[in-house]
Image (tube, rainbow, N blue to C red; front, side, top):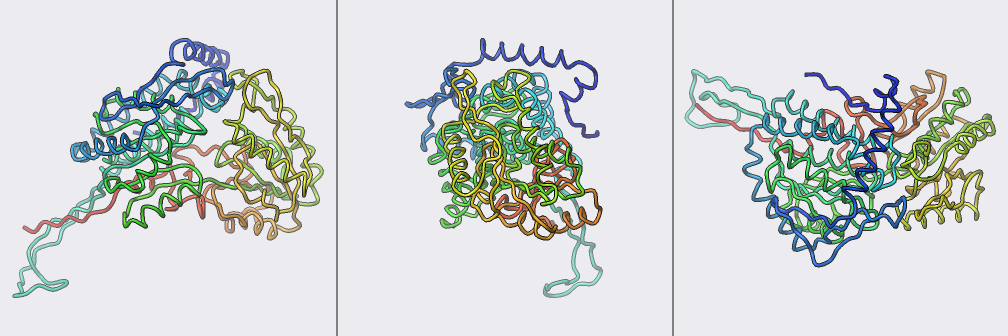
Length: 539
């Protein structure tokens, strides 16, 4: 069986069916609003509906008068209950033949495909993505399911056999390398146990599915918590639970709870029955969880992605039009709320004015507003806290730099938080070149030599993605040899730093952006959710 990516919009477009694509999405939005949103939803522990005395009200960032749903504010006690359920289910699930687990997650991929447009519509309403971003994200979730299923299948459940031959000679006492009887040896990877999965708001379907399915398909059980506090994305998390259940995941194997990370995430860190944590979010939170676990002597497996401050470099030999398009797309798609978004650009001083002119032209062309409308490119910020970060960056620039374009909140006629994509000229030493902001705010500075540009590009604590534009092979080679980032792109017109495709690119962070140096969507990812065992049986 070959792996193939979904590429839904691409297929519609290439077949001349874009109108049909739009009709399907618009119809799904109507269905979501009339049949799905606004209800009181449960958590699921051991397959049973559970509620809490307190509730979390989730509103759409598009318009905060639109109620997405009411969810339980789960307590630490309920987190412990979910961990206990997952722990009890572990033995049976871990001993389930890997072929059966593969079958279940291929079933899940088919259900996601069947529900694709409704899921994308809910996602757009829930976190403010455009239809294209949302369909692409659901596609990525399907790709993860199929890719990891094929990977486990191709590696025969990560088990291999070897043998030590019997020796005709014997010895009276054993020692290293002593001749003896035959030994049948099996080298295999086994699951850790219970994984706590903590998902972000910005890719609540694809990242959630990627982390959860990787843990589950390798034989672990999961307690899954979607983003539930300031930046809420709980309804998509519930849909994931429902699809996994329909696909055949047994009760207790996958548990769904919503609530504050300060309690639930903390319980994952300190609970001795949790064998591992999969987390995507801030570096501060990731490091804090690891420090707390290890300070208690709990040696958990951590699979974490912790943000980025992603650069693009534009050489004087570059195709400036392509560079401007790629950087604008990477910086301002989904209002810059991606860990892989381009947030700083270094342009050769000789082409600065031409590049800025083309970049600003591109920024002017981006329509800001309701992302459910097909012609909108930049939707809302996820929360009031995001707005405060944006205003902070604008104020800092006004003190020590220059706003070239943008810098204002705007009224689009909806009760959401909408701001202009912003380009700010600053010195590289300014803290805005080093802090992750997660808003549509791009810093620009110039350089004289490639060496200078690379030193500046690497001069941050993160190392997630990076882009480069040059027509010279020698410059490209030097960039690829020296850049400290896990995902790098050269001369990419569609996006300078975003848009990794499962099975084609691996998505991995270096330095403060990750931990293991192994990325999702790659042949090394599943191995992080397992530990090796050598089993030797003498004949």
